[in-house]
Amino acid sequence: MTARTLTCHVIAVEDLTSDVFRVSLEGRAEAVAHAPGQYLELKLDDETWVPFSIANAHRGDGAIELHIQHWPERENSRRMREVIEHSPQLTVRLPGGDCVLTPSGGRPLLLLAAGTGFAQVKALMEAALAADGNRPIALWWAVRERRDFYLESLPREWAETYPNVDFHGVSEAPLDIDFAAERVHAHHGRIDRVLAATLDDVSGCDVYLSGSPGMVYACIDTLAPLGLDPGRTFSDVFAYAPRVPLIPLPEISAEAAALSAGEERKV
Image 1 (cartoon, helix red, strand yellow):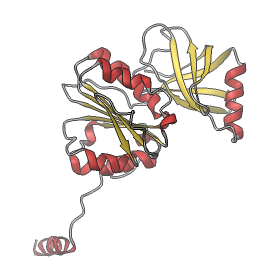
Image 2 (image 1 turned 30 degrees about the horizontal axis):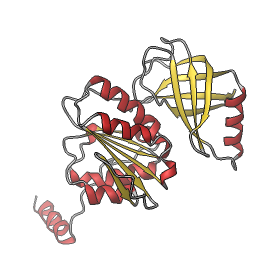
Image 3 (image 1 turned 120 degrees about the vertical axis):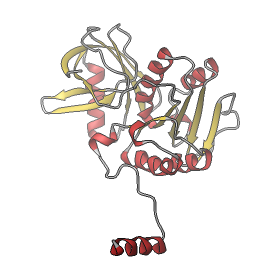
Image 4 (image 1 turned 90 degrees about the horizontal axis):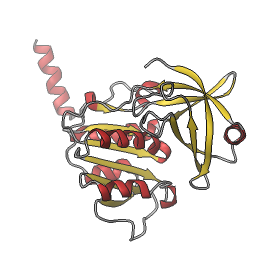
């Protein structure tokens, strides 16, 4: 889709936690069309455009949902909050990004998000469930502590409604004993380490990662030995913070390296 610049009405600004708020926008339905997983850029001034994942799949009603991290101690964050709260309309540019939901071909879906990376994952989930309610989906959401699951009830609802959906909550602080439920799993630690301890094969999965470059590449390094398919691995990080090679080469022993070098000399 070609990116378009348009004006959207601000319908609501809602605090989800003390440092995450949700913004509901509305524009012409055909103008805000986007693929699940794409983002928009919000104009703060003539020189400043800020990207945010679109947190809902396109429904044809002109609705746009954003999840925004708020840092009160940071000037730019305070300014953004003030602009959004006090402007009846906002100028946006959309859609952007190539990390979009692709036809499944029957492949299970593995979604990995950190913090407000859940916004992108939410749009992917909505579209995936609408396209195929029986597709196996594992959603992993990593946070520092439980209160950072700012929409915890939503993935719980998906797991309760769809027997093919599992929600894995990963927290750096221990989770309460009441967190776990049927198809809802509690994990303590850093997400890449939890993945390493929990998964054993991802070779058949479509994998989407939404978070910082550090989080994304740590997870890729963890999943690579488990059969991660580079052609079925997607993240916006690959566009703005690329790494070559994407999948790390397997380490080989010094003895094997010397043997390989000897074989090359023989040739």
